[in-house]
Image 1 (cartoon, rainbow, N blue to C red):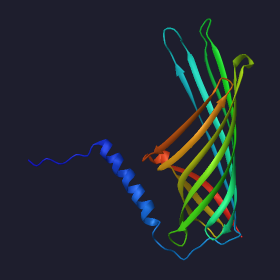
Image 2 (image 1 turned 180 degrees about the vertical axis):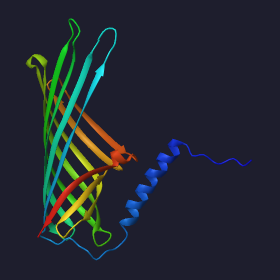
Image 3 (image 1 turned 90 degrees about the vertical axis):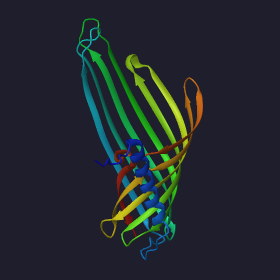
Image 4 (image 1 turned 120 degrees about the horizontal axis):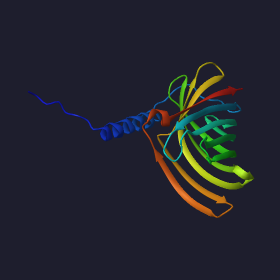
Length: 224
């Protein structure tokens, strides 16, 4: 009886990462006739909303509940200074309310709300692959402000800067509208964080082959 070779989950994950990276880099060497003209204006927007509610029960905390919502909005504007090269700026904001409480006698009721705002100048280089498909690389410098409000009116403020480089893909649905995805296969980040209690400096790198983590979709208009 012949034995079939088996592939471990770790090996499969590595193979998916390799295939995605090979696809991206191979496409950068292909040529295409479609070019994005100088003077074209870019408008992009992403809206995200999510949340969860959990009910727990334990001897010390009967009927405990936890809920959280996330609402975020990101806008981008840009202009092509030359063919297939754009500079622009992104604005973002998010609101994250959180609450955990218990109906038990003497139970706690903890509330927290995080507000974040950010601005990120960026440049983007495009590489047309087919008539409607282009790949791009986007370095950006971001500045973020956040405020966390806790129960009993306690607050904490923080400030952060970051330098990011990430690839992406753009597909033209019509003459002016495109669907874009930030391909978070690999990204580099350099950040500085300052809070009421201190500051920190960090370098980060990220690689993923999980589809929910790889793709972040956005609608965009190219106007000329």
